Image (cartoon, rainbow, N blue to C red; front, side, top):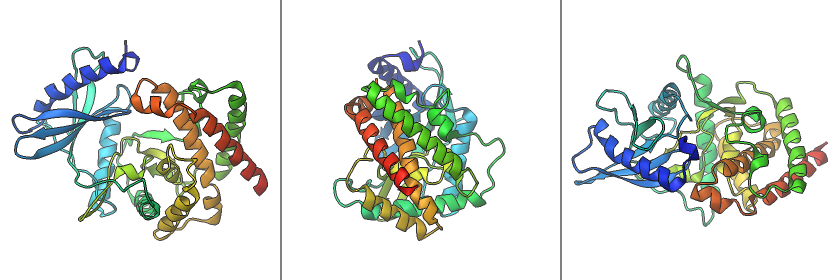
Length: 337
């Protein structure tokens, strides 16, 4: 049985044991303990010790990233921080001088990679009120990151996931097949098949020139901004990889694509982006295509991660809303000619 086939409660029990037993791989204070704070692709733990020590331990999902791919993620974090593009979390080096540790826990079928990050002070922007200022900042941060990667000489053998049409719609999609998601009825599937083809056609015409398709964060939501009186920090680069720059906006509205505030949030993001980097009218028009690409990917993600609490909570009605959004998207595309 792989980790992905194990019931979630059982898996988390084994991962908790691994988290506690692995703290000795780093030079952490005596009495340190790890407490689960989030589970998605990875399991994330808050590590605390007497005297106020805090750190964040990430235990990677089985077979999601290679050691080299994680090295590349950490390399980009360091480069962004060093260049003053955005503040990113620091990383603790293990006792063996490698920031990426690997250990095998009892009950787990395979070893897991782990990274111990510096604890980042700050709070995510409030998503219950007016989010326009937050999205304007997101747009500016995205543009600064995009400008950086265009001039950054990436290390040799740079390995990261790719977030393109093949990753979502190809024969071996990264997050699974949207057709297998909960509540996808034959009628919905008929609409979504047309949406998929429309998105494919638009992306093919849009192209993958380096100034449009390059290294992106791929999960730049408000929840991944932490703000305090010293500034804004960008966290959770686990999904960073090759993709269209405009996918960073689509990721920023993950799971709220049907919120009536989206047009104003998009306008705020574009305003922030253009304060740093040029964005043509043709590119702005195509943002909706990336929103649909991301939404279809999220539909697949819910289906392939249904054991976890968040996908279970999101599943009711998600397919129906996706089909409705897709129908409206296709009507807008047709209206544009």
